Each structure stands twice: as structure tokens, then as C-alpha cells.
Image 1 (cartoon, helix red, strand yellow):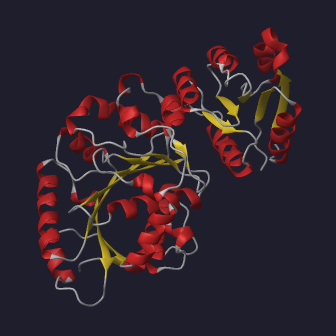
Image 2 (cartoon, helix red, strand yellow):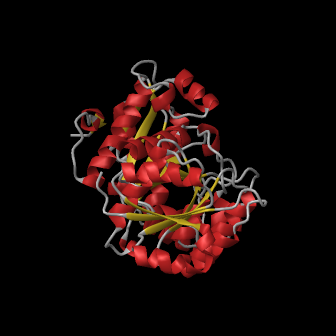
Image 3 (cartoon, one colour):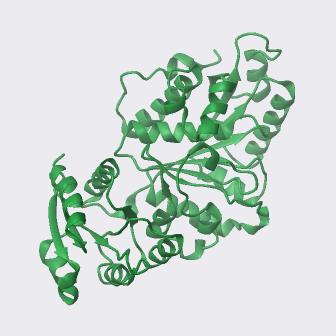
Amino acid sequence: MSTGLVIGLIYRNETTKAQFGQIVTGLKAGFVALPFTLNGSLVSKVREAGCHALIVEGNDEEEQDSSLVEALITELSDIPVYAAFREPGVDIIRRLMRVGARDVIPVPPAEDDLKRELSRLKTSMGKDGDSRKGKIISIINSKSGSGATTIAVNMACDIAAMDEELKVALIDLDIQFGCVSLYLDVKWQANVMDALGQASRLDKTMLSAMMSHHDSGLYALPAPTKITRLDRISTADVKKFMEVIRQTFDVVVLDLPKAINDWNEEILKASDDIYVVIQRSLAILRDARLLMSYFHSAGIEDDKVTIVDNRYRSKHSAVTDKQIFDTLKIERMIRVANDYDAVMGSQDHGMPLSKHAKHSRICKDIHQISEKIVEEITGEKREQAGLLGRLIRRH
């Protein structure tokens, strides 16, 4: 990968210099290493070298002193500045987030993660960062427990793993009972209320610093660990939040609460695609019909709604395809197979289906949905895309 990038590193020890240098030069990017002892001349040296991004090694020995990192972020506000620590604490991450750190990189660095980040920097070179307009995909249950979180988590992980050039986010907006955090075994930096609570000053850098990184390439933001009142969020906060996530990511998958209020309606209206998750029971079909009626009253068009027929079984269902079409009046419907054991095992192990049960029918069904989304975004047809074969249309 010839990136054309020049990456600067301000290091405190030779081991760190060697670790980052090996990865960056191996990716055919320019590498400029400067010892922190240069002190007052560091900014001018970075400018002279023409660095497109800077990594600054923090001081782990003196209770994670971040003063140098913070000072450089302030003086080099026109380029991305990353902090590098061995085991950064929550307090230091929040401090760096507030002053504008692009991300906190572990020491020693993970090659795959650094490669992905360099690819994104390459893509953004010469472009106005504010011109990004990410695709917003909202997943909502027609009735609680229908499986929206399973669909959302695995769809987001699939999309991130399929194309490393896409910056993909998963955000759990079910602030009362969200459980995205159970599906992904990562060290969480913050939760969605931390972002919404600072919406008035939220920007791309702050949001990126809050997100936790999964090994699929996905960035995720979980729900809070305590039940939060729905009225803690305002429509104005949500509008700003949606604006920032569109600017920050190429694809954003939102796991929504089953709640009808002003801010959730704002999200649904702003979404590019809405996946309504149902199961084949009369009670769930009734709730789905109510939800579709609400969409119509809110001015949400049918053409951005897809029904996900989750936990589908070819037999033993009292509800037929015709009844679903006649009740919901939606042309787009996708089937996802029933596999309770695979889903529970995936959740219990904190890993996506693509790792826990790669060959399961449900994994393949969700993978096909994700492939179609990636095709639409990139304009490139994937070799094994098979969603159209399972897309049911009424004729």
C-alpha cells in the first residue's frame, strides 16, 4: 500500500520508535521520528517534515502525564494528532478527548489497526473532511425481543470487515435497555449518553475519541449501564449528534429503542434506511402494523423501510407471507433464519456470529444483507452477494 502519507512520531524510548517505524515503513508511508527531548522545536520540526499526522508517546511512568500530548494537539490543530500509551486510564482518555486527540493508540501498536487508520488518512488527503455524508441505517424492533440488536451488531461487524476503507460505527441508542455491549468484547471508553450530554460542543474529534474499536474494524458506542430517562435527551441534542456522526463515519448502524417520542422520530426521519425487525406471530404483526401507521403519519416514506423476517422457520408458522404483505403493505422483506443456539453462544462469548458461528444459516443471511449494503455504498458488486435471491417481492 503506497500511501503518500508522512507520519510523524514523537517518542520517549527507542523501543517505541522501532515498533511504530517497522509498521509505518512496511506500509510504504513516510516516517519521521523525533525525540521528545527536542521540546520547544518539536512543532517546527513536524511542520518542516510535512507530516500529515502525528503520533505522540505519552509518559506512562509519571502517572500517565499527558501534558506534552495536550500541548501539541493545541499547536497542531490542522493535522490529526494521536496519543500513544501502554494502558491509558479513563481519566487521561477523557482529557485527551476534550483537547482534540484523534485517537489513543496502544503501545505496542496493533499492525492491522494502524494499517486501517493509515488507509483512512490516505482517503481523506486532499478532501474537505466536512464533506463526508455517512449513510445512517436504523434498526428497530416491532416488538421488544424480536432480535434487532442481533441484526444491528452483526450487520455492522460484517460491513466493517468487508471493506477496510469504510469507517463504520455501531451506536446503541436504547438508553434504557440497550445490550450492544454484551455482544462485543471490547474495553469501552464511553457510552452514548456521554456524547449526547455534550452535544452542543460535540465534533468529529471528540466523538472519535469516545468510540471503542472492535477487531472487526468497527467503532462502537454502547448504551449506559444504568436506566436513563428518555426525557434526558432533547431533539436539539439528537440533531447535532446525527450531524456529527454523518461527518465522522461512512456507515452508521443505530440500534434504536422501541419508543415513540420527538427525538426518536428525528432519528428515524434522518435515517437513510430503516430495518423493522419482526417475527411471525399475530401479536408482533399487529405491533408492526401500528409502527408502519406511525411512520406514515410522521412522513417517513415506505421506500426506505425494509422488513426483516427474523427467526424465520419454513414450517410451523401460523403467519404466511401473504398475511405479512397484506398487513404491512411493504414490498421489501428479507428473511433471517432461526438459530437460537448460535445467537446465544455469540452473545455469551462476546463475539459476532462471523467468528462464533461462521457457517450458521443466520450468519450467512445477515452477511448477505451486509454485502448488499456495501455494494450500494461502494458501487462495486461483491463476488458472493446473494441478497437478491432471498429478497421477497410481491408481484
